[in-house]
Image (cartoon, rainbow, N blue to C red):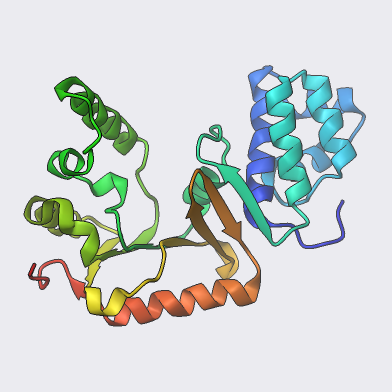
Length: 257
């Protein structure tokens, strides 16, 4: 067991990966623990994210379960990230990704979207307006279809507050604003608009709050998502979100220029 406080996003994704590798082989927890020569309690703690396994233990589990080389590298990379306050994953990560795990376990989520409306709320008109590089109608239809499929996989749990920058509405202001006004009535969801004069140049970020008021910030950078769990940095983002929220207006009260 590592002696340092593990990076929460990496730990949660690691535990989900170990559990997924075991269930994919159809093995019960006690049976696998017996074959590995460890206690069922220890394996359970690793699979639930309540204890960080040593890197040798992770390698032992993955080797016994004969995961693919790519999956072995991905999970071992997660283990190495446990001891860092920052972890990184690519946007094409697998089902046990850090972002997905945080989404599932968060009790509250705070999202700031200054330039692009979050995907679950984008309308077909918005997609059409932003897909300027589409080669033709078929490509556009495919983009809309793929977006609708992703929408089905991006529901949220618990409470979620989304602040959308006014600049993000620009490609299709009226239909997109109508969609946001309708979504704002969903239970557990609050959507507000931040005027251009308030938003300034603050880049997008998402804050996930877990049990015990544990906070993690997710930052998108090109094809990667960077997760920050260092307390001072996280509190800085939390303060920034509160300041943006104070300057925001409800979707019903927002009037486009």
